[in-house]
Image (cartoon, rainbow, N blue to C red; front, top):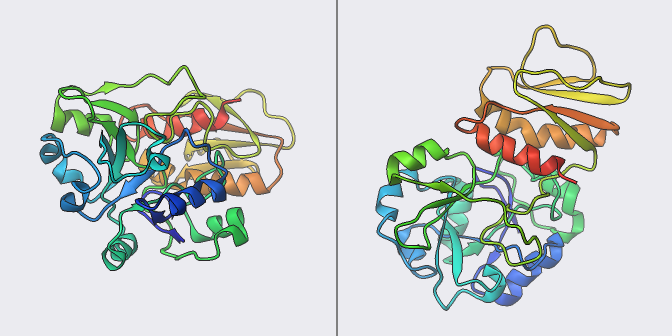
Length: 298
């Protein structure tokens, strides 16, 4: 079943049932080295799948919300969910529909993005239907996702060390204000080994159309016929049928909200190339740039 979250739509399954979790990998074509995030309704439920850390108290203001924490796993969590690692990624989501399903089912739910592995994540129910079709016959339409990019992931599995594994709607600056020092993880050199968390592979979130990136506030390379240009904010001096702007209000939060939806729409138009502007890297701009950089990787 595909369910809405405040980040992207997720393909949900019982996280403690190895067969159910295995079906998620099969439906998505997801490699088993890429672990799943386990969604729970509260801290009491979290303690049934992970070893709680004292620093969760400091992060309490961010939950429910778009934050995932990597902790030491409980033995009840099957290896297929964690890529065989001794850690598990856990989140307390905020979307009311997802939370109601958690309440009614009484389950911890693994819910990676409801799309073929590596493709642009779904932020609308129609995206799930377009991408997965009959492979996912049950889709709950909760409207467009609030944030439009996947959750922030911070690793607390090592005592005294906090590592940002994936930027997201909760910016690094906010994590440091709550936790103190938070280091940013480097990309894993071995792309074939089990990953510490989802979204760490070099290439991910990719449309079929090739992307070429250009700096924030800069200009794209010469644009040929049949190519599109994607700007973060509206530029009055840049217009035309193949020019697109992600934010009318001028905020990177709005640009991130619209990013995956617009990439999917441009992908359907058959452009030969999309020139895409990076954002200022502060705040949510780090998550925006992370998704575009991985989407453009070859």
